[in-house]
Structure formats: C-alpha cells, structure tokens
Image (cartoon, rainbow, N blue to C red):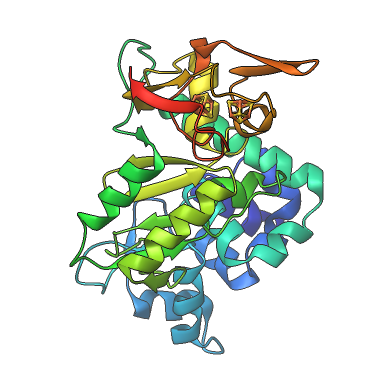
Length: 307
Ligand code: SF4
Ligand code: SF4
C-alpha cells in the first residue's frame, strides 16, 4: 500500500502536508486509480474497470470520484477522463465532503489550506504593476444590477471554497453565485443549487447584511471576507488594495450626519474607521470601495463616491 500511496501522491501532485490525511480524504479505490494513471493520461470507463478489478461498481465509482473532484472529464464528449490534482480537488473535497473535512485534525486542515493558498498566490502574475485577474469589487446595488443583466441565464448557488477551506470566521459559507455549468464545474459535479434571479439577488442581499463584500469576475459573484478570500488575502500580500481586485469607489464620510455609533468600525475589514472614546475617526487610505459600511450606517453618513 505504501508504494501505491507514494505513486498516487506523485501522480496527484499531493504535497507532503497531505500525506497523513490521504486515506481520510480519498477512498482506497481512488488512491488505486490515481496510482495507476499518469497525470496527463486520458482513460476510459473500461480502463477504470480494469484498474479497479471485477469487484468494483464502476458506474458508482465514477459518479463519486467525479463529484468529489478526483477525476475530471477530458473533453466535451464525456467519454474520456483525466486524473485531477490535489490543488484543484482540495476545495472540492472541503465543499463536497464537508463533515469529513471538518473532522480532520485542525492542524492538518490549516497546513493543507495554507499550502493551497500559497499555491494560488504563487501562480499569480508576479509583476505587481499588472492586475493578475479581472476581479472587480462592486457595491451591493451594482452587484444586484450585474445579476439583473444575466436574466435568461441559469444561475447557481455554491458553497464558497475559500471559506469552506479556511472558514473559521463564522460568516456564512453558502453564498457563492455562479453562472457557469460547463463540464468539470461545481454545478456539473452536482455540488450546486439552481436559483431564480430573484433568489440569487436575495443571497447577495443577505450576504451584504452579514458583512460580506461582493467581488465579480466574469461568471462568478464571490461574497467573502478578508480573512478567508483568496483574492483579499492575495491583495494584502501584494499590497494592491484599490488596484486589484479593481475598485471604482471609495468611501466618503459625512461627519455632520455621523452619530459615532461605531457600527462601521465593526463592518470595515480594512481599519478605515477607528473608535476612540465616543468619537470615530476616518482614514480612507486602505478603503477598497466595497460599501458594506455604507449599507449598515443607520444615519446615511457613509456614501461611496468615484475613486
Ligand atoms: S455607522 Fe455611520 S453613524 Fe455610526 S459611526 Fe459609522 S459613520 Fe457614524
Ligand atoms: S470603508 Fe467601507 S467601503 Fe471602504 S473598505 Fe471599509 S467597509 Fe469597504
């Protein structure tokens, strides 16, 4: 078994930190398949049957291994498979087998989640003068308009993979909106729930109420926080607040309306507001224009303005 496991780790590009937990994350059959096929090799259902042996229920294995991100379809014909890799499958594991992931020792979860984030970060364009993605932070109203413009398309609700991997913050995790249901997507793997446009807008409004920021990228709306979200964690490491993820807004504070209740100090994740005694002070240097302070301010003292 040790040799099979070593081959699986090599083919699945599994990091050393995952080694103590592999049998808890993957079934014995998944490890056996991963050990038998090379990373770029394509294989058929018949190949899987031959590798697993005559006792295996191949259809049920394929359904599980696809849902859990161990294998992917190689093309649109859906007749050829490919082995996935540890990086691409870890968040699918955290989403699709949440109880098993949460049952892993905390230090194991942290080590694998940290490894996954570092891997994501190291794949970003290292040139800090270039935005490494098309991510745009939108205030609530513009996020709702973005959804409205997608009327006629199918829309889905997913568990947020960042928060599922790192989610110790207690904020809602069932908040990710996507419009992509192609092969190998969360939707196609059976991990998503279809929504109406109005339901999708309600998810975003509830996420805003819960203090989550909205970031849009093509066919995804991420509702997340600064301590879990790969984008905001990367932004912090790159020192790119205000540049990437892109923002077109900055907060404007009207001191004549403010009653110094301090609510905004608890909403803002970028320390724009500081409460000292019974007064707040404002420094917009690190403001990313998310607007979640403005939607909570009881006196209308906060307004997003063009950056
Ligand atoms: S939430 Fe509004 S009223 Fe309360 S301290 Fe902040 S700006 Fe002032
Ligand atoms: S000040 Fe408001 S808009 Fe700016 S980052 Fe903080 S919560 Fe977001």
